[in-house]
Length: 383
Ligand code: SAH
Ligand code: SF4
Image 1 (cartoon, rainbow, N blue to C red):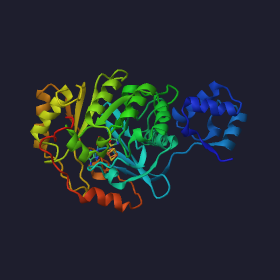
Image 2: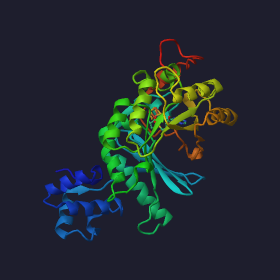
Image 3: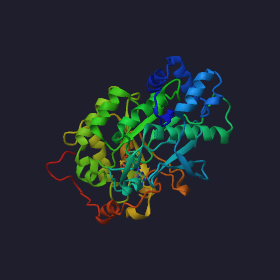
Image 4: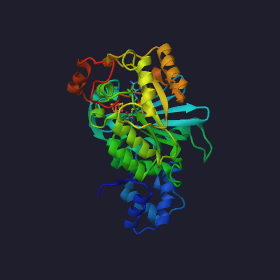
């Protein structure tokens, strides 16, 4: 019998599995706490579990994060880990320390099928979904590793926030994502509050609704354009779920969300989506004044584009970012400009590339065509 990786279970899953071993629920809780609160992987050291249970666990189970390929520390304190997930695929995880928190940026897929123009992961194409154990394994590994390097006392956490903003589209890997989120939130697990766990999506509308029902954590939506014609070019998924539908789904989400706004991410691309005219159009969009799209309570997070060689795109100058932000702020929209962290180790947003097998065809499709820039949306389309 192949050993089961216990990082694949949320507490209900672990309880059911322990039940199969003839063990009671509170044993599963104890075990869960050993795994996720203490970061223990050696069953022999789980001192308050009966010897007989420890023996059974040693026979039937393992606790294993994906294999580490490399660890890189940036001058600004950011740490990036590269993990081998088999078949020539690797994924990246990034820790970003700040004064009042420590944020872990986790990957959900090897590659990504959405294929956004400005994203290095998108240029690789899709390889495969990560399993729950591989998603949780990134958190489990990072917390354990950081506790060692930072020498934290028992009970203190290095990671206070999680963002699903690494490689992949989390809402296209929902089956594995959901138990992983539950492990993060569980009081016997990482005990993170819903507002400290953020799922970032390019806009998979039906799955935004599912997340609202199953596990409403903080939501970030990668917008990048205020009208459909431009968003179709930058985020191809927009052709399936256009802006009006996306903003409606965001409004439904707000009914259950732990915060009373949605974060909209906007990657600043010079001359592509960063003009004052588009900033004004973005204001009208979130006010509900464009096409069929409803108004939305939101905050804007402007992300200066992190270039990578094949993109053919340019980061907006600080002046252009500031001018764009001014338009939004003058309209009363809370707007932040994301500081680029971990630039020197290619750990910044959209630079997570991993080491994947060459997917030359996707790559060519994405690099060959220039982006068509529409001054105004063509007639007949929303926004
Ligand atoms: N697939 C999800 C989450 C991963 S991407 C999503 O798209 O939301 C996380 C964030 O990084 C997204 O907002 C994405 O648009 C942004 N991003 C991707 N490539 C980037 C780049 N080259 N520079 C800056 N931000 C980028
Ligand atoms: Fe995928 Fe997000 Fe990158 Fe788009 S930005 S290709 S959805 S990871």
